[in-house]
Image (cartoon, rainbow, N blue to C red; front, top):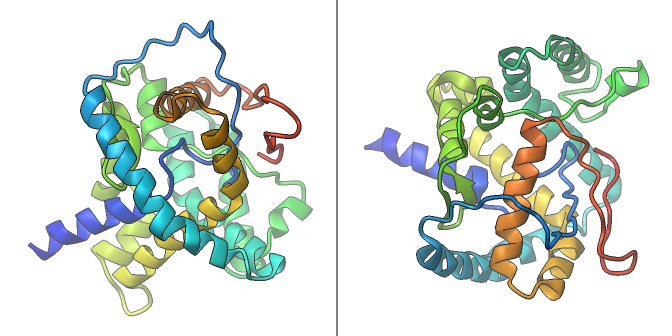
Length: 267
């Protein structure tokens, strides 16, 4: 029973942050223009239910997560930058095995070197020392992306309470991390050593969500303000973003306007 509750808690904390797509490498999301001629097929098998859950998630975000993100923004920029660096460094334990599974051996080598250098000389990743030596940050990878590269279809799109948008394929990819694919999860939750505990894992996931939300306060406000149908916009953004990531396509998107949209360039 305790194990089951732990897994549920992990999933909630891991995905709570935003009812919009995955973040870029620095946690900031590029919000692009949804073109009318997009021929992307959407398998929204439970749209009526999804819309209800989406509205619930929006309410939770406004009451809980958005205020937390605003509070987080009150910390000095160096503190927030160091936090982001440490969280991104920790994310390499998932990115590296997926680099290998996708045949991206050069990226796997670079990310491994970055992880070793930043974890030691960068003091647990707080400082991005590796970039100083020419080892630039690489795109994040996850098991959902790997399944896509291997040819697995996305399946139905659906929205989960608190967790936000996902697909069958991405959900299976997320589960892979909890059954041995995430070294940080294994060290903290599965083994629960004297040095690391479950609390460390939960705290890192929660902080990652708050950090992501704080970086995108204006972007998501603009998305809500400029969308005729916010649910459809979020769905399209999520699916297009995942498609670009799986195809390793340049993340640059067309912006609505210089005033209304902030294009986030540092991927």
